[in-house]
Image (tube, rainbow, N blue to C red; front, side):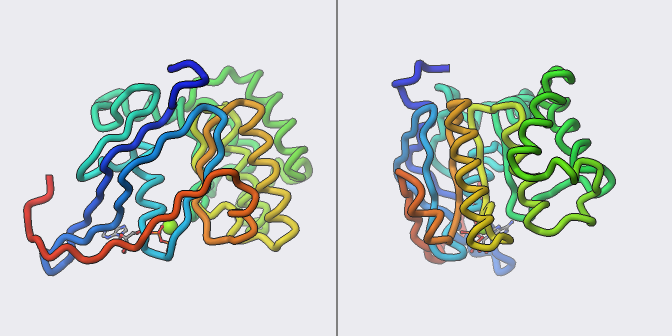
Length: 234
Ligand SMILES: Nc1ncnc2c1ncn2[C@@H]1O[C@H](COP(=O)(O)OP(=O)(O)OP(=O)(O)O)[C@@H](O)[C@H]1O
Ligand SMILES: [Mg+2]
């Protein structure tokens, strides 16, 4: 990992294309340059379809970009290869747009399973889960399965799960979409506070104007057009 003053994340010439059913390639993301340090908090905004989720998926190494470089801690994410899943589990906390809580496990178990995958010792995970669930107002929901939770409670559980192991990178895709204004403010303040404490780089994709205002850095994506080229995708 670089020291605190050098960039933790550097993006250059990033493009992502998806193949359309008619064979044309559709440009889903265009981002020329971005750099961010440990402890930074930035928001990614732009119209629906401008590539916010695609960008977060690339940052989590869930997909490889068609073009360009993403360096994290000096490492090119496209070169991760076989170590990809352990890198992701240890380095990234992800609040998915659809939350992706495990339906057969309760709130606490959802957190502990994520901790185990990220190699966090169980005692430390239990202590931290207690603290986080209390701070997120979920202390009496520990034993509940996701289907018994309100959407807001599910979203807060997803936030707790993402920050549990204090990963260097926390990605959150529309983390307030199911919350009213008051709860949205509470969740965003906690996310900023928790990532600040662990010096995690926090990147949030959102349409929410009030969320945008609470962040020091804004990355605005433009909706890329259809690329008429039918070139073969790598
Ligand atoms: N798996 C896929 N296959 C084909 N096209 C895709 C795929 N995923 C996304 N796209 C397209 O890529 C573009 C960017 O999608 P993406 O989900 O990244 O946008 P977004 O900014 O997150 O949108 P929203 O605000 O609605 O969540 C869209 O035009 C979308 O239709
Ligand atoms: Mg999206």
